Each structure stands twice: as structure tokens, then as C-alpha cells.
Amino acid sequence: MILSRKNSAISSSPTLAIDAKFKAMKEQGKDVISFGVGEPDFDTPQNVKQAGIDAINQGWTKYTPTRGFLKLQYVIAAQLMRDDRMVYDEGNIVVSNGTKHSLTNAFMAILNPGDEVIIPAPYWVSYPEIVKIADGTPVIVQTSEANDFKITAAEFENSITANTKAIIINSPCNPTGAVYTLEELESLANVAKKHKIFAISDEVYGQFIYNDVKHATIAKFIPYETIIVSGVSKSHAMTGWRIGYTASTAEIAQIIENIQSHTTSNASSISQAAAIEAFRRSSLGSVEQMRTEFNRRRLYLVDAINKISGISCKAPDGAFYLWVNVKGLLGNTYYGSTIANSYELCESLLENAGIALVPGECFGVPGYVRWSYAASMENIEKGVERLTTFVTHGEKTFVAHI
Image (cartoon, rainbow, N blue to C red; front, side, top):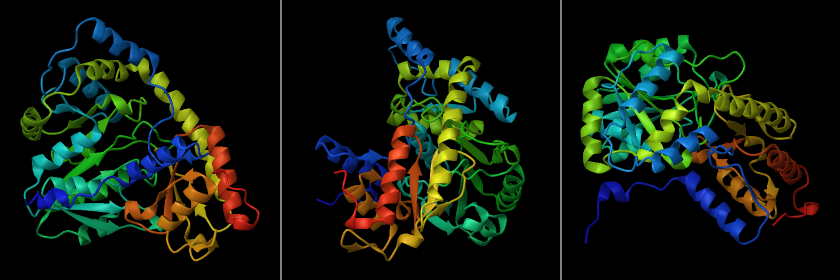
């Protein structure tokens, strides 16, 4: 029997595949440390967990409106006003089962077969596949390290065709940690408006920005053409709770609601109750504690990485990833194998040094690796030590941890 050609062509998530291999090695008793998956190592804040417990005890265990509890929509709108001075109400918000689900809903709401979506590279691994699921065509646009891997207005405009329907703006960016300035977003918005193109603004890391850099959204300039996508997975260490949302025009929100009503119905009622607490002002302290700790790790790791011969990285302005240039290691031989690309490097590092990183090929840009510092400082220090030993000594003197 012939199965779905479209969905048979969808690849699995490489970051989850790497995490699965890491966990399998861990279960075998091998001493391995993961810096691969973008999951905060903090626990969900106690007040948020308690809100979920209270919801269970109070019987919040039934279907909810497809768009989510009205109270949750209100607190999401309040945060958008507080953070970006953007005005949304319940007619614009749809709560879904995580940010991936929200992105899928957004693309399904705007795309028709053959529509193209511009995706700046490096990109989050799921973007191209989600676009394909929604019958769109991903168009990958390479960006430059000189511009912190942010797409410019000229690069955007030069990539537009008669079929271009949308562009993805991910700020702060996974995997680079780059943050677009208000001025950069305005220039991109001018191009989008000129060509009548949607902007999908993935802002799930928006709470984790460092130094004096400010969070900004392209919706400031093209509110009717922008679909904001975010959630609580990263900001409140709630990856397992599965709560994401879209903020868009009422027309798009209605289409998303219609789609969701026939697929997943509503997000978990218990998770929604916890998310209401997460979005309240009273939870900002927990977010700030995480941001402060991520910043401490960021500063340590950037300094440590740049001291290792053959690799380098820029200090990211947001998220919790380092985008590490490893081109200086390619072509070298480690443990009897010559490393041709960053994928082979990551395989060797996992097998021979006991650290799991994600190769740049997964994000559309070879010659780099992504290092998540959503891990304890103890493990980060061990990881740096293992990487340093791997690079400087190789097989002759390195005692394998596994």
C-alpha cells in the first residue's frame, strides 16, 4: 500500500535523535554529558506547579474552549502589552499544545500548496519540516557570521519570488542566540509590507536576553501581517506542560481555532491553569533568576570556548545556546578518524569525549556546533575540560570517560 508521500518525506528531529542516543549511552552506564537539547535544567517554579495541583483538586479536568481559558488569554495579552506595548485581546489569542503546535497551526492557517516560506539559516531544525507539513516550500537563505547570522533587508528582498508567502523571524534565535534590534526589524518589516508577506515571529526565548539588549518584535511595524508565536516551555521551565500560543489578527486566529478544533481540541486544562500563574507578574522573579544564572554560564562558556585552539564563538545576546565555529578542527584526525564535517565531529565527541553537541548541519550551516548552556555549571565545566582535552591531546593521552 502507498503511504503519504508528503509525510513520508518528513525527517525526524535531529536534536531529539541525538538526545535519544545520549540517553541510551547513559542507560548503559557510560559517563556522558548532554549539551544538545534546548531544555532548561531548572524545575518549574513552585507557585506554577501548585497552580496545576490546585486545578486538579478543584476539578479543572474537563474540556476547555478550543482557544484556551479566557483568563489565560487575558494574561497572555497582558504580557504582550507589558513587554512590547502590543494590544491584543481574546479574539487574537489561541492557546495550543506547545510552541511547535502553535507554529504548525500558524503555517496551516496561511499557506497553500506551492507557497514559499523564507527561512534564514542557521534555523531551528523543525522550521523546514513544519512548513512542508503545511504544504509550503521552505526557502533557505544563508546569513553571515559578520552580521551575527541575522538576515538583512537586502537578503530578504533578493530571496522573494512570486510565490513567497512568509518569512520566519526567530529572535532571540535558536541556535545562534542572536537578537534583532528594533531598527533591523523595521527594515525587514518594510520589505514584508512592500511585498505583502507574512512574518512568523518566533519569540519563545524572549525572556532570556542579556546585557543592555532589548527585546523587540516585528509586529510593532506590521501587526496585521505578523503572527507572534511563543509559550512557557523555556521561560518557566515547562517543556513537559506543552503550552504555546499565537497572537494574530482575529481572522487568522479564527482559522487556527477551526483547525485545532478538529485536531487536538484544547490544550491540557491542568497545564493551562499552571500557565495562568506563569504569566502573572508574581512569576517574573523566577524567570529573572533563571536569566541571571543563564547569563553567568554564558559569560563563563564564551570565555572558555574562545581559549580552545581551533574553535571560536561570539557572545550571544539571548536564548541559552552558543553557536561555535569549529572549522579549525575539520580535517584533523582524532581517535583514528579524520573529521570531515561538524556532524562527524559531534559523533566523535560523543563516543570519545562523552559530550553531546548538535552539529551545524542540523541547522542548515556546516562548520559549527550548537552548545546549550541549559545545563549545570558543574557539567559545563566538565564539558569544557573534556572538549579541551579532546582538541589538544587527542587519542595519545586522553583517557576516555566512556
